[in-house]
Image 1 (tube, helix red, strand yellow):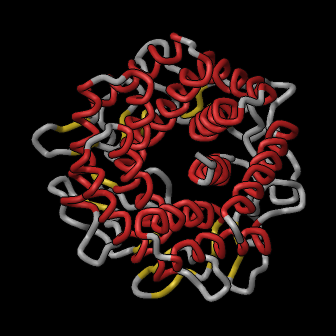
Image 2 (cartoon, one colour; image 1 turned 180 degrees about the vertical axis):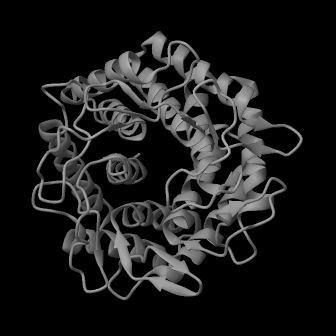
Length: 392
């Protein structure tokens, strides 16, 4: 596959994904977006509405409008922004709620820093797309709340979860599958991602300094000697898990380098370029002969599932490794990831399946859209590859 062909296929795929969400996700009865669309494309209007879903829709459609200049995407971006502002933002204590019921009433009022980061990410992208100053002010307010309540200057990192009034919670887990440790890679990665996007919008030198510190956390504590990411840590950054997440390895590979590029720090651009290749090599341990990337390695054994989002991140991360090294093996891995998606992950309706089992059959009982299933990973992969392969 030639770069121009790859880029053209990404442009078509982005349109298919976004049209699925434009047509099916808006909630015509209760407002905002339907909280769940199952694997058979059936909407469940009674489902709760998640902060992460709404924020990722806001980011995706704002970014699509900004990067493609197609105004058809603005209506969904506007809807996501208005619903977030009216229902998710906590007018009393600041921050955003974790979930609402189907009618838009706060359901889980916890302040998960992972969720605050995605809300910040979406708001900053909406500002970049529209110039709406209120969105930037809301993003900056979220940044200041995260720094005030979550960052620990002596222990060098971010605490995970808080109650509505910003008192710290005893159970910080993001989901039932997570460990209850006070530091996680996942939250720090997405705080970094959000801060880098906010820096694009406001160029605040304090934010640039914090991005440098986050990159140092990854270099010093989170990327382990094997090249994989540690996932869970105690307060002193001692690892608490041997679980390997191939998707996070390759996602971090390009997000770390992109953050260094955003702040235009030459030293960190060089360091994260090296880290990116180490992380890509580690992630490649999870690539199967069919081009797909396995989900995880747990206690030394592969979890024999291939979820949608690691395939999307592999497409971008391996492409970046090719751009950094000029080694054709990385180009081929990126293209093979996309070929795997076309053959096994992409559904006829336009959105991707949650994933497939080891025999390539779709994983049963999983959603096309929902609390965790959003157009962010695959939509972003399309836009990122389009950007990286654009003729100069």
